[in-house]
Image (cartoon, protein in one colour):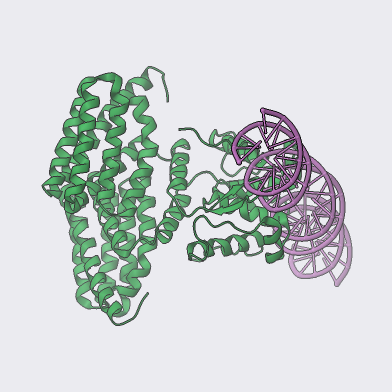
Length: 246
Length: 246
DNA sequence: ATTATCATAATGGTTAGACCATTTATATCG
DNA sequence: CGATATAAATGGTCTAACCATTATGATAAT
């Protein structure tokens, strides 16, 4: 219920004030805060204390410091960057496993695609189909283009998230992809039938979205992710037994 | 692809070193770092610079500072706490609407409960049923206990998340609840049939979890959230038209 | 006139040393 | 033995200076 009181620290007060100003829109993205020596005077604190506050705000991802003349603290607004970092840290600290992440992805992709099926406009469908055409091209070119294929695959997923029109899903899915992508590179088998199956999955999903069949879209999306996951897990087992680690 | 180089800053180097030590297990949770004046000497930097590094580590959630004799920087390890904070910040800053949040919740609760249905142990079921019994008690007591009822309701949802055994879902769901709860208070109608329906929903969900019927569990959980959402939207409309805002 | 080079000043990055505030351990006294 | 005062350790803050980086404008070379 209650949090431990820790008001004593001056820099925390400064952090709170500037953070509130940003979140309330009094400071807009791109605005530059006054120079340290001026802020110092306004807050009536020492420069060291002010700088501690700036370090916290920087780590929160709310500002970015630029050097030199006309430099200073630039307001950055909030992005998914820090969430991604935190998730990556959790994975590295082994509080979260690839299995957890893959499982989470399955649920999220399912929901995203179901929403996309409900909301896709004809323009959205056109975009998806042009991406599918790109994917087909890369597929035909064979294994050398697998990386390009995967890139398009990811692009399709992110497009579906945008079509869902829900910013939370867009952010969350982006974070998941950023963190799961390194595993693709390491564990996804480089075999033609994998790409083949992947492409068929995508076609089916887009078709379900086009026809507005949200239930089927969800099912297909989850199946698609499951295929990915199964390949990765199999390969991970092999690699682990072979003594190779990521 | 490449990131902007920013090696110049000494405190960043210190942050990296200490962070690596923690993530590699050289520093264990609960360990206390040497006093600032000693660290300062070891790194051969000034105390101000060291303190900037400590602020960053603190904000990352990796250490916690204690005052007084035998105080210092205590290693905290990595938790999902910061993800929650950042997601909450994202929700506020992007001015995500209640609709977005409610919709996201629907998908997440569905996935969580489906997983719970697959994984619940007899002990889990016992816990859920005892929570249901509490809910029933509060329901019988009538409207005065609505707050208590909602509290138990939330507890049940969080228990289901734990039963899913996936830490990502646990922390995401917690964040969602923290951010959606204020709306409950404002917009949820205080009428007996709402609690009644809510209670029935919960019973159905627990039953589906008990019988391991994951498909039905997902469906029921989404339905449950939809009921909540519908009530809130209706009431929000009324309030908005009446000129009352949250 | 245009371009290249350089000097200047604004601004963040770092240092040194001092003092204040909080907390724990210890010594002292009843 | 217990309460209380004192001392010491440690984080929190301040002042004042200097270093490092960069945009800008002045100057010189073409």
